[in-house]
Length: 176
Image: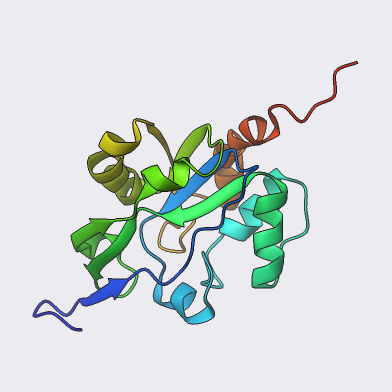
């Protein structure tokens, strides 16, 4: 449904990626048109999210949706988005209005999530305003991996995202 300002009402079409071993939750705002088309998170070919995930976990860059899901779940990462629905122009986070949040609190009750990270300023702002009051869990803002965030290089993104690795690995190391 198109609004007067040229934005469309979008209802989030993707289920969260999460299992009982997930320790870190990474939230975007809303899947882009390309992500909605391919049916998976961070689906735009120029989005650097999957290159970053592969680099921080020293894995090959996943090529299929099944490989992407396997990568994050193997490393105890859950994926979802802050919004259940909104009005948006294309993939422009700055155009988001009429927000309805996802029920992040319920997701947090399904897995031992220890930290919430948001990909970009808009996701962090929306989470803090719409979700944090019900979750009681603060978020850490990470730089957006979107091609629109060209000011941040791939090496800079990798360095910023490395902070999630120790949280994912907690409890996995064998002491000896």
